[in-house]
Length: 241
Image (cartoon, rainbow, N blue to C red; front, side, top):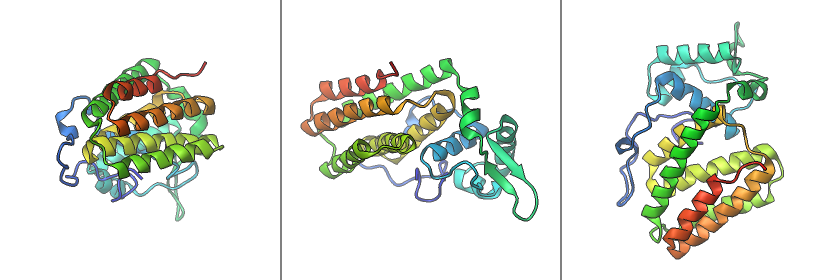
């Protein structure tokens, strides 16, 4: 989960006090999502993380509003928009509610936007390069060990959905390790939006990127700044052949 307080948030409330040397996402540009976009990106991210799946019932709008720290009317409008897009289904009756559409994987490709995806990916690259440059040689060994465990798990994974979930977790946990909870939230914003506008990479691409993950952790452990940054760049430049 992105936040231990709930599947989807809260994100506008103060997080834990930042540790010495970590960043606060509020000083960074580019987080200007509307409330509706935040709802969309958080639901998309949770589908990618397999916290919710097609056919699952979402929490009521009031619960989502509280978890995300935004207005309930905004959440209702966002959910209605996602229903109109075919991402969610609204059902009436005692067993009703708002559900992730069974056709989620069919609808999402219709929302892909190459220009927006390129812009978001470029910002994510810039963010990770900055975090690596800031943290090289200063990352606690236990944090690197936890990230290495994800790399090892990806090496053993065969299911494409599990591979995507683990890669997403790696980048969220990397953001936490190098920048703290505020940067993790910012990364969640970016990754959630990318889930909707960028085609999911093929398993062989994810495996190639995982080799970049391993290289990055090795260089961070050595405190080697330039090679660590190059590993981040190599990851972001790994695309389907």
